[in-house]
Image (tube, rainbow, N blue to C red; front, side):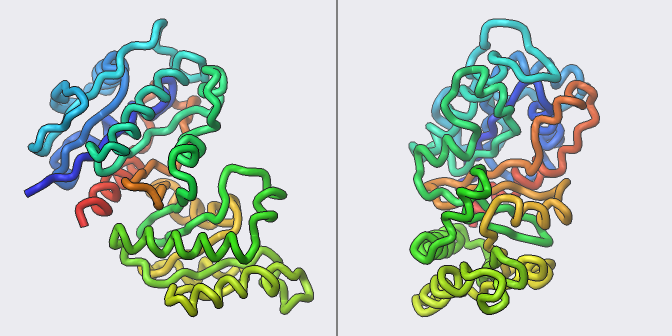
Length: 324
């Protein structure tokens, strides 16, 4: 039997990433059997483990190959000069979190890992480290153009046409050709991981989905033609639906997914029902990437009170989507 290899980047050392990773892995017996490989500064791991007083078994140090047996492994990226800084953004933490993420993504791209689970990073720390990407998603976009940001929970699933861009720019992407390509890519990606999603419900962007052109023409001129063309190609898609009701059509229907036109349109509804357990999922790449649906939470870093449920669900989803 082959067990999936799941990489885990520790995230920003100054935030709650290391804490929620350790808590989610303790005990390992509560997770599906897999080869879990943590990427990060071993000093950060050891310090967090001691602070939390966990009995989690010590991970086995490895290089760039992963043993066949299920268990917990550690790929030490080495220490960035300077002390571990807690509770705020800084250049050293940005460099450390990027090194761990870059190493995990590189091995996943080579087929060594089946999925990567990323603990939260600080965009400010990355900027202080002079990194040219705003965050995880932008880096992945640079390597895998067309990667899709989606959000997963037991109660609701959402895919975003656009994500970390200004709203004015996001609205400019609501065009028939862009939408049609997106529907095709999303359909292929969901099928590839055997997601169980068999219907896409597309949100409009104007009140009442444009009210037949009375409140805006984007639905009539761009969204509906793209939906109809995709449906003729056999893609199970419908809409556009008013954005204030489409989530009700999908809520508690695990075989359905909302396609939102912009970041906040999709995530206000999603985080309302699944903030503690939702998972950020990147599709459309040669491997699966998942992440907890929260940030670094600098204000509670080092206090031992961070909720690990979203990280736990991110690990479980990574295994499920790669083991299917």
